[in-house]
Length: 61
Image (cartoon, rainbow, N blue to C red):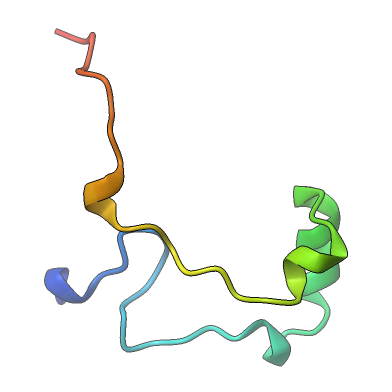
């Protein structure tokens, strides 16, 4: 698998798309399970840049 081409925010690679309009029956299920309002489905929200994420240091030894 091409590691540099992997999506850090989801499944698959950057050169593959998984459009929900091809899976019309999946969108209502996701909306119900994730409790998404209708307006959340009207636009695509790009992922945030990975370098803007700040995590606390691990507490595991």
